[in-house]
Image (cartoon, rainbow, N blue to C red):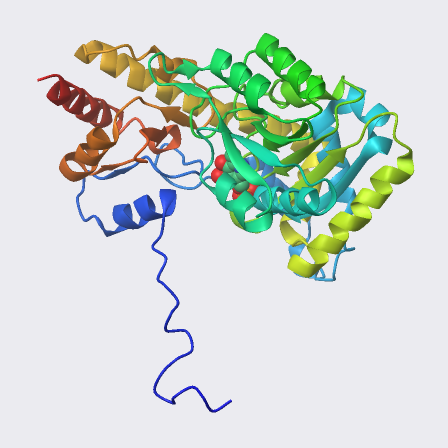
Length: 418
Ligand SMILES: Cc1ncc(COP(=O)(O)O)c(C=O)c1O
Protein backbone atom coordinates (compact mmCIF):
# COMPACT_ATOMS: atom_id res chain seq x y z
CA UNK A 1 0.00 0.00 0.00
CA UNK A 2 1.10 3.58 -0.39
CA UNK A 3 3.90 2.74 -2.87
CA UNK A 4 1.83 3.80 -5.90
CA UNK A 5 2.09 7.58 -6.48
CA UNK A 6 -1.38 9.15 -6.48
CA UNK A 7 -0.99 10.54 -10.01
CA UNK A 8 0.09 7.27 -11.57
CA UNK A 9 -1.76 4.03 -12.22
CA UNK A 10 -0.56 0.54 -11.50
CA UNK A 11 -1.87 -0.28 -14.99
CA UNK A 12 0.56 1.91 -16.89
CA UNK A 13 2.43 -1.12 -18.21
CA UNK A 14 -0.72 -2.55 -19.77
CA UNK A 15 -0.28 -2.49 -23.52
CA UNK A 16 -3.15 -1.49 -25.75
CA UNK A 17 -4.30 -4.46 -27.82
CA UNK A 18 -5.77 -3.26 -31.11
CA UNK A 19 -8.80 -5.01 -32.54
CA UNK A 20 -7.86 -7.90 -34.79
CA UNK A 21 -9.46 -10.07 -37.51
CA UNK A 22 -13.05 -9.38 -38.50
CA UNK A 23 -13.52 -6.82 -35.69
CA UNK A 24 -10.85 -4.56 -37.16
CA UNK A 25 -12.50 -4.80 -40.59
CA UNK A 26 -15.91 -4.08 -39.07
CA UNK A 27 -14.56 -0.95 -37.32
CA UNK A 28 -12.93 0.29 -40.55
CA UNK A 29 -16.17 -0.37 -42.48
CA UNK A 30 -18.24 1.58 -39.96
CA UNK A 31 -16.00 4.63 -40.16
CA UNK A 32 -16.01 4.65 -43.99
CA UNK A 33 -18.43 7.32 -45.25
CA UNK A 34 -18.55 6.15 -48.89
CA UNK A 35 -22.01 5.32 -50.23
CA UNK A 36 -20.53 2.44 -52.19
CA UNK A 37 -19.09 0.63 -49.17
CA UNK A 38 -19.69 -3.10 -48.86
CA UNK A 39 -19.04 -5.21 -45.78
CA UNK A 40 -17.87 -8.68 -46.76
CA UNK A 41 -16.13 -9.23 -43.41
CA UNK A 42 -19.22 -9.89 -41.36
CA UNK A 43 -19.63 -13.35 -39.81
CA UNK A 44 -23.39 -13.16 -39.42
CA UNK A 45 -26.28 -13.75 -41.82
CA UNK A 46 -27.70 -10.67 -43.54
CA UNK A 47 -30.84 -10.44 -45.68
CA UNK A 48 -31.00 -8.98 -49.17
CA UNK A 49 -31.36 -5.51 -47.66
CA UNK A 50 -28.11 -6.05 -45.73
CA UNK A 51 -29.95 -6.30 -42.41
CA UNK A 52 -29.84 -8.90 -39.60
CA UNK A 53 -32.64 -11.44 -40.06
CA UNK A 54 -35.01 -12.54 -37.31
CA UNK A 55 -35.85 -16.11 -38.29
CA UNK A 56 -39.64 -16.60 -38.57
CA UNK A 57 -39.25 -19.77 -36.46
CA UNK A 58 -37.54 -17.78 -33.70
CA UNK A 59 -40.15 -15.01 -33.89
CA UNK A 60 -42.89 -17.62 -33.52
CA UNK A 61 -41.08 -19.29 -30.60
CA UNK A 62 -40.88 -15.98 -28.76
CA UNK A 63 -44.60 -15.40 -29.32
CA UNK A 64 -45.39 -18.78 -27.79
CA UNK A 65 -43.11 -18.26 -24.79
CA UNK A 66 -45.40 -15.81 -23.02
CA UNK A 67 -42.42 -13.52 -22.44
CA UNK A 68 -44.03 -11.06 -19.99
CA UNK A 69 -44.50 -13.84 -17.44
CA UNK A 70 -41.14 -15.60 -17.98
CA UNK A 71 -39.18 -15.71 -14.71
CA UNK A 72 -35.42 -15.32 -14.55
CA UNK A 73 -34.37 -18.12 -12.23
CA UNK A 74 -30.93 -19.71 -12.22
CA UNK A 75 -30.64 -22.83 -14.40
CA UNK A 76 -28.91 -25.95 -13.04
CA UNK A 77 -25.11 -25.71 -13.21
CA UNK A 78 -24.86 -28.03 -16.21
CA UNK A 79 -27.60 -26.12 -18.04
CA UNK A 80 -31.23 -26.67 -18.98
CA UNK A 81 -31.97 -30.34 -19.68
CA UNK A 82 -34.96 -29.44 -21.85
CA UNK A 83 -32.46 -27.66 -24.12
CA UNK A 84 -29.46 -30.00 -23.86
CA UNK A 85 -31.33 -33.17 -24.84
CA UNK A 86 -32.85 -31.95 -28.12
CA UNK A 87 -29.59 -30.12 -28.88
CA UNK A 88 -27.73 -33.44 -28.56
CA UNK A 89 -30.39 -35.21 -30.68
CA UNK A 90 -29.84 -32.62 -33.39
CA UNK A 91 -26.15 -33.52 -33.50
CA UNK A 92 -26.50 -37.30 -33.49
CA UNK A 93 -29.89 -37.71 -35.19
CA UNK A 94 -32.98 -39.58 -34.04
CA UNK A 95 -31.56 -42.96 -35.05
CA UNK A 96 -28.16 -42.81 -33.36
CA UNK A 97 -29.01 -40.67 -30.36
CA UNK A 98 -30.77 -43.28 -28.15
CA UNK A 99 -27.82 -45.64 -28.59
CA UNK A 100 -25.13 -43.08 -27.94
CA UNK A 101 -26.77 -40.86 -25.30
CA UNK A 102 -25.63 -42.88 -22.23
CA UNK A 103 -22.04 -42.45 -23.37
CA UNK A 104 -22.22 -38.69 -23.91
CA UNK A 105 -21.40 -36.04 -21.32
CA UNK A 106 -23.31 -32.92 -22.34
CA UNK A 107 -23.60 -29.47 -20.87
CA UNK A 108 -24.93 -26.10 -21.94
CA UNK A 109 -22.23 -23.54 -22.74
CA UNK A 110 -21.84 -19.88 -23.58
CA UNK A 111 -22.37 -20.60 -27.25
CA UNK A 112 -19.73 -22.22 -29.48
CA UNK A 113 -16.88 -20.11 -28.11
CA UNK A 114 -17.72 -21.24 -24.59
CA UNK A 115 -17.78 -24.90 -25.68
CA UNK A 116 -14.40 -24.52 -27.42
CA UNK A 117 -12.79 -22.94 -24.38
CA UNK A 118 -14.25 -25.45 -21.90
CA UNK A 119 -13.04 -28.44 -23.93
CA UNK A 120 -9.56 -26.88 -24.16
CA UNK A 121 -9.44 -26.44 -20.38
CA UNK A 122 -10.89 -29.90 -19.76
CA UNK A 123 -8.36 -31.64 -22.02
CA UNK A 124 -5.50 -29.67 -20.48
CA UNK A 125 -6.58 -30.73 -17.02
CA UNK A 126 -7.54 -34.36 -17.60
CA UNK A 127 -6.03 -35.74 -20.81
CA UNK A 128 -2.98 -33.52 -21.38
CA UNK A 129 -2.44 -34.11 -25.09
CA UNK A 130 0.96 -32.83 -26.20
CA UNK A 131 -0.41 -31.06 -29.25
CA UNK A 132 -3.67 -29.70 -30.60
CA UNK A 133 -3.83 -29.81 -34.39
CA UNK A 134 -5.76 -26.97 -36.00
CA UNK A 135 -6.44 -26.60 -39.73
CA UNK A 136 -3.87 -24.14 -41.13
CA UNK A 137 -6.78 -21.91 -42.10
CA UNK A 138 -9.31 -21.71 -39.32
CA UNK A 139 -11.57 -19.38 -37.38
CA UNK A 140 -9.12 -16.81 -36.01
CA UNK A 141 -10.28 -17.42 -32.45
CA UNK A 142 -9.25 -21.10 -32.40
CA UNK A 143 -5.49 -20.59 -31.79
CA UNK A 144 -6.32 -17.83 -29.33
CA UNK A 145 -8.74 -20.07 -27.40
CA UNK A 146 -6.25 -22.93 -27.15
CA UNK A 147 -3.28 -20.75 -26.17
CA UNK A 148 -5.31 -18.93 -23.54
CA UNK A 149 -7.07 -21.93 -22.02
CA UNK A 150 -4.53 -24.69 -22.47
CA UNK A 151 -1.08 -23.08 -22.60
CA UNK A 152 0.68 -26.40 -21.96
CA UNK A 153 -0.75 -27.90 -25.16
CA UNK A 154 1.28 -26.98 -28.23
CA UNK A 155 -0.76 -25.52 -31.09
CA UNK A 156 0.16 -27.09 -34.45
CA UNK A 157 -1.25 -26.56 -37.95
CA UNK A 158 -2.23 -29.22 -40.43
CA UNK A 159 -2.45 -28.29 -44.14
CA UNK A 160 -5.99 -27.52 -45.24
CA UNK A 161 -6.27 -25.13 -48.18
CA UNK A 162 -4.41 -25.57 -51.44
CA UNK A 163 -3.83 -22.04 -52.75
CA UNK A 164 -3.16 -23.27 -56.29
CA UNK A 165 -6.36 -25.21 -56.76
CA UNK A 166 -8.52 -23.34 -54.19
CA UNK A 167 -9.51 -26.74 -52.81
CA UNK A 168 -8.75 -29.07 -49.91
CA UNK A 169 -5.13 -30.14 -49.58
CA UNK A 170 -6.23 -33.60 -48.53
CA UNK A 171 -2.92 -35.29 -49.32
CA UNK A 172 -1.04 -32.69 -47.28
CA UNK A 173 -3.48 -33.01 -44.39
CA UNK A 174 -3.17 -36.79 -44.23
CA UNK A 175 0.60 -36.87 -44.73
CA UNK A 176 1.27 -34.27 -42.03
CA UNK A 177 -0.92 -35.95 -39.44
CA UNK A 178 0.40 -39.37 -40.34
CA UNK A 179 3.97 -38.15 -39.93
CA UNK A 180 3.83 -35.62 -37.08
CA UNK A 181 0.77 -36.31 -34.92
CA UNK A 182 1.65 -38.14 -31.74
CA UNK A 183 -0.50 -40.76 -30.19
CA UNK A 184 -3.03 -39.05 -27.94
CA UNK A 185 -2.81 -35.62 -29.59
CA UNK A 186 -6.00 -33.61 -30.03
CA UNK A 187 -7.27 -32.42 -33.41
CA UNK A 188 -9.87 -29.83 -34.28
CA UNK A 189 -12.16 -30.50 -37.24
CA UNK A 190 -14.91 -28.24 -38.57
CA UNK A 191 -18.01 -30.41 -38.84
CA UNK A 192 -19.25 -28.58 -41.96
CA UNK A 193 -19.11 -25.24 -43.77
CA UNK A 194 -15.47 -24.66 -42.88
CA UNK A 195 -14.68 -21.13 -41.73
CA UNK A 196 -12.89 -19.43 -43.48
CA UNK A 197 -12.37 -21.51 -46.64
CA UNK A 198 -15.87 -22.84 -47.35
CA UNK A 199 -14.25 -26.19 -48.19
CA UNK A 200 -15.27 -29.44 -46.48
CA UNK A 201 -13.85 -32.94 -46.94
CA UNK A 202 -15.94 -35.35 -49.03
CA UNK A 203 -17.58 -38.33 -47.32
CA UNK A 204 -14.75 -40.61 -48.47
CA UNK A 205 -12.17 -38.17 -47.15
CA UNK A 206 -13.99 -37.98 -43.80
CA UNK A 207 -13.83 -41.78 -43.62
CA UNK A 208 -10.06 -41.68 -44.10
CA UNK A 209 -9.64 -38.93 -41.51
CA UNK A 210 -11.70 -40.96 -39.00
CA UNK A 211 -9.54 -44.04 -39.59
CA UNK A 212 -6.36 -42.02 -39.10
CA UNK A 213 -7.67 -40.44 -35.89
CA UNK A 214 -8.61 -43.89 -34.63
CA UNK A 215 -5.23 -45.35 -35.56
CA UNK A 216 -3.36 -42.52 -33.83
CA UNK A 217 -5.78 -42.53 -30.89
CA UNK A 218 -6.27 -38.80 -31.39
CA UNK A 219 -8.97 -36.95 -29.50
CA UNK A 220 -11.18 -35.16 -32.01
CA UNK A 221 -12.83 -31.84 -31.25
CA UNK A 222 -15.58 -31.09 -33.75
CA UNK A 223 -16.52 -27.47 -34.06
CA UNK A 224 -20.11 -27.41 -35.25
CA UNK A 225 -21.03 -23.77 -35.69
CA UNK A 226 -22.85 -24.03 -39.03
CA UNK A 227 -25.16 -27.06 -38.95
CA UNK A 228 -27.79 -26.30 -41.58
CA UNK A 229 -25.67 -23.75 -43.44
CA UNK A 230 -23.79 -26.05 -45.80
CA UNK A 231 -26.50 -28.17 -47.41
CA UNK A 232 -29.39 -26.30 -45.79
CA UNK A 233 -30.11 -29.68 -44.21
CA UNK A 234 -29.41 -30.50 -40.57
CA UNK A 235 -28.82 -34.22 -41.12
CA UNK A 236 -26.48 -33.87 -44.08
CA UNK A 237 -24.49 -31.22 -42.23
CA UNK A 238 -23.99 -33.58 -39.27
CA UNK A 239 -22.75 -36.42 -41.50
CA UNK A 240 -19.11 -36.10 -40.45
CA UNK A 241 -19.89 -36.24 -36.73
CA UNK A 242 -22.34 -39.11 -37.12
CA UNK A 243 -19.80 -41.01 -39.15
CA UNK A 244 -17.18 -40.64 -36.40
CA UNK A 245 -19.81 -41.86 -33.94
CA UNK A 246 -20.03 -45.15 -35.86
CA UNK A 247 -16.49 -45.89 -34.64
CA UNK A 248 -17.29 -47.10 -31.12
CA UNK A 249 -13.76 -46.58 -29.84
CA UNK A 250 -13.31 -43.05 -31.16
CA UNK A 251 -13.78 -40.58 -28.33
CA UNK A 252 -14.54 -37.04 -29.39
CA UNK A 253 -16.17 -33.76 -28.47
CA UNK A 254 -18.68 -31.58 -30.29
CA UNK A 255 -18.76 -27.83 -29.71
CA UNK A 256 -22.26 -26.87 -30.81
CA UNK A 257 -23.36 -23.33 -31.55
CA UNK A 258 -26.85 -22.00 -32.31
CA UNK A 259 -25.59 -18.50 -33.14
CA UNK A 260 -25.77 -18.87 -36.90
CA UNK A 261 -28.41 -21.50 -37.58
CA UNK A 262 -30.98 -19.87 -35.27
CA UNK A 263 -29.65 -16.34 -35.67
CA UNK A 264 -29.27 -16.15 -31.87
CA UNK A 265 -25.80 -14.58 -32.04
CA UNK A 266 -25.99 -12.30 -29.02
CA UNK A 267 -27.94 -14.73 -26.85
CA UNK A 268 -24.95 -17.13 -26.57
CA UNK A 269 -26.66 -20.48 -27.05
CA UNK A 270 -24.54 -23.60 -27.31
CA UNK A 271 -23.58 -26.95 -25.88
CA UNK A 272 -20.57 -29.18 -25.42
CA UNK A 273 -20.93 -32.93 -25.91
CA UNK A 274 -18.14 -35.37 -25.08
CA UNK A 275 -18.61 -38.84 -26.54
CA UNK A 276 -16.81 -41.62 -24.66
CA UNK A 277 -15.94 -45.07 -25.96
CA UNK A 278 -18.94 -47.38 -26.10
CA UNK A 279 -16.88 -49.72 -23.91
CA UNK A 280 -16.79 -47.15 -21.12
CA UNK A 281 -19.03 -47.50 -18.09
CA UNK A 282 -21.85 -44.92 -18.13
CA UNK A 283 -20.36 -43.54 -14.89
CA UNK A 284 -17.48 -42.15 -17.01
CA UNK A 285 -19.78 -39.74 -18.85
CA UNK A 286 -21.28 -38.63 -15.53
CA UNK A 287 -17.80 -38.04 -14.06
CA UNK A 288 -16.80 -36.03 -17.14
CA UNK A 289 -19.88 -33.87 -16.84
CA UNK A 290 -19.16 -33.20 -13.18
CA UNK A 291 -15.66 -31.96 -14.13
CA UNK A 292 -17.00 -29.82 -16.97
CA UNK A 293 -19.40 -28.24 -14.51
CA UNK A 294 -16.51 -27.64 -12.11
CA UNK A 295 -14.53 -25.78 -14.79
CA UNK A 296 -17.58 -23.86 -15.98
CA UNK A 297 -18.44 -22.79 -12.44
CA UNK A 298 -15.09 -21.05 -12.07
CA UNK A 299 -15.56 -19.32 -15.43
CA UNK A 300 -19.14 -18.16 -15.83
CA UNK A 301 -21.02 -20.38 -13.39
CA UNK A 302 -24.13 -20.97 -15.52
CA UNK A 303 -24.79 -20.40 -19.23
CA UNK A 304 -27.50 -17.82 -20.06
CA UNK A 305 -31.06 -19.12 -20.07
CA UNK A 306 -33.11 -16.93 -22.39
CA UNK A 307 -31.69 -17.94 -25.77
CA UNK A 308 -31.60 -21.59 -24.70
CA UNK A 309 -35.31 -21.38 -23.93
CA UNK A 310 -35.99 -19.91 -27.36
CA UNK A 311 -33.94 -22.71 -28.94
CA UNK A 312 -35.79 -25.31 -26.86
CA UNK A 313 -39.14 -24.01 -28.12
CA UNK A 314 -37.95 -24.25 -31.74
CA UNK A 315 -36.43 -27.70 -31.26
CA UNK A 316 -39.37 -29.24 -29.44
CA UNK A 317 -42.43 -27.83 -31.21
CA UNK A 318 -43.12 -29.83 -34.35
CA UNK A 319 -44.68 -26.91 -36.16
CA UNK A 320 -41.96 -24.39 -35.30
CA UNK A 321 -39.27 -26.94 -36.08
CA UNK A 322 -40.72 -27.35 -39.59
CA UNK A 323 -40.63 -23.59 -39.99
CA UNK A 324 -36.97 -23.65 -38.89
CA UNK A 325 -36.15 -26.20 -41.59
CA UNK A 326 -37.64 -23.78 -44.11
CA UNK A 327 -35.65 -20.90 -42.60
CA UNK A 328 -32.42 -22.88 -43.03
CA UNK A 329 -33.26 -23.63 -46.66
CA UNK A 330 -34.03 -19.95 -47.14
CA UNK A 331 -30.73 -18.72 -45.62
CA UNK A 332 -28.54 -21.30 -47.30
CA UNK A 333 -30.49 -20.75 -50.55
CA UNK A 334 -29.81 -17.02 -50.52
CA UNK A 335 -26.13 -17.70 -49.90
CA UNK A 336 -25.98 -20.18 -52.80
CA UNK A 337 -27.80 -17.73 -55.07
CA UNK A 338 -25.27 -15.01 -54.20
CA UNK A 339 -22.36 -17.38 -54.88
CA UNK A 340 -23.87 -18.09 -58.29
CA UNK A 341 -24.52 -14.41 -58.99
CA UNK A 342 -20.91 -13.47 -58.17
CA UNK A 343 -19.60 -16.34 -60.28
CA UNK A 344 -21.85 -15.40 -63.24
CA UNK A 345 -20.75 -11.76 -63.10
CA UNK A 346 -17.05 -12.72 -63.02
CA UNK A 347 -17.50 -15.08 -65.94
CA UNK A 348 -19.46 -12.44 -67.88
CA UNK A 349 -16.64 -9.95 -67.27
CA UNK A 350 -14.08 -12.51 -68.41
CA UNK A 351 -12.11 -11.96 -65.19
CA UNK A 352 -8.78 -13.80 -65.56
CA UNK A 353 -8.57 -17.10 -63.65
CA UNK A 354 -11.05 -19.78 -62.72
CA UNK A 355 -13.82 -18.77 -60.32
CA UNK A 356 -15.54 -22.11 -60.02
CA UNK A 357 -14.40 -22.40 -56.40
CA UNK A 358 -16.83 -19.60 -55.51
CA UNK A 359 -19.77 -21.89 -56.34
CA UNK A 360 -18.09 -25.10 -55.20
CA UNK A 361 -17.37 -23.80 -51.70
CA UNK A 362 -20.09 -24.05 -49.11
CA UNK A 363 -21.51 -22.25 -46.07
CA UNK A 364 -21.21 -18.60 -45.20
CA UNK A 365 -17.70 -17.94 -46.44
CA UNK A 366 -15.63 -18.05 -49.58
CA UNK A 367 -11.88 -17.93 -49.96
CA UNK A 368 -11.71 -15.87 -53.11
CA UNK A 369 -8.02 -16.44 -53.83
CA UNK A 370 -7.35 -12.66 -53.75
CA UNK A 371 -3.97 -11.77 -52.24
CA UNK A 372 -3.47 -9.49 -49.24
CA UNK A 373 -2.37 -6.71 -51.59
CA UNK A 374 -5.45 -7.13 -53.75
CA UNK A 375 -7.63 -7.08 -50.63
CA UNK A 376 -5.99 -3.77 -49.65
CA UNK A 377 -6.88 -2.30 -53.05
CA UNK A 378 -10.47 -3.58 -52.72
CA UNK A 379 -10.71 -1.59 -49.51
CA UNK A 380 -8.82 1.57 -50.47
CA UNK A 381 -10.16 2.03 -53.98
CA UNK A 382 -13.58 0.36 -53.87
CA UNK A 383 -14.56 0.54 -50.16
CA UNK A 384 -15.12 -3.21 -50.13
CA UNK A 385 -14.12 -4.76 -46.81
CA UNK A 386 -12.92 -8.35 -46.53
CA UNK A 387 -10.35 -10.27 -44.48
CA UNK A 388 -6.67 -9.92 -45.55
CA UNK A 389 -6.69 -13.66 -46.33
CA UNK A 390 -9.13 -13.02 -49.18
CA UNK A 391 -12.07 -14.46 -47.24
CA UNK A 392 -15.45 -12.95 -47.97
CA UNK A 393 -18.70 -13.48 -46.18
CA UNK A 394 -21.18 -14.30 -48.93
CA UNK A 395 -23.91 -12.87 -46.67
CA UNK A 396 -22.56 -9.39 -47.38
CA UNK A 397 -23.47 -9.80 -51.05
CA UNK A 398 -26.90 -8.80 -52.30
CA UNK A 399 -28.66 -8.11 -55.57
CA UNK A 400 -27.85 -4.42 -55.15
CA UNK A 401 -24.06 -4.82 -54.78
CA UNK A 402 -22.96 -8.08 -56.42
CA UNK A 403 -22.23 -6.43 -59.81
CA UNK A 404 -20.16 -3.73 -58.11
CA UNK A 405 -18.17 -6.32 -56.13
CA UNK A 406 -17.55 -8.40 -59.26
CA UNK A 407 -16.31 -5.34 -61.18
CA UNK A 408 -13.97 -4.47 -58.31
CA UNK A 409 -12.57 -8.03 -58.21
CA UNK A 410 -12.18 -7.92 -61.97
CA UNK A 411 -10.26 -4.65 -61.71
CA UNK A 412 -7.83 -5.78 -58.97
CA UNK A 413 -7.17 -9.09 -60.69
CA UNK A 414 -6.42 -7.38 -64.03
CA UNK A 415 -4.25 -4.78 -62.30
CA UNK A 416 -2.15 -7.61 -60.89
CA UNK A 417 -1.80 -9.06 -64.40
CA UNK A 418 -0.70 -5.79 -66.00
C1 LIG B 1 -15.85 -21.99 -36.81
C2 LIG B 1 -16.52 -21.24 -35.70
N1 LIG B 1 -16.62 -21.82 -34.52
C3 LIG B 1 -17.22 -21.21 -33.49
C4 LIG B 1 -17.75 -19.96 -33.63
C5 LIG B 1 -18.36 -19.39 -32.39
O1 LIG B 1 -19.46 -18.64 -32.48
P1 LIG B 1 -20.38 -18.46 -31.19
O2 LIG B 1 -19.50 -18.27 -30.00
O3 LIG B 1 -21.19 -17.25 -31.50
O4 LIG B 1 -21.19 -19.70 -31.08
C6 LIG B 1 -17.66 -19.29 -34.86
C7 LIG B 1 -18.15 -17.92 -35.05
O5 LIG B 1 -17.88 -17.22 -35.97
C8 LIG B 1 -17.04 -19.96 -35.92
O6 LIG B 1 -16.93 -19.41 -37.13
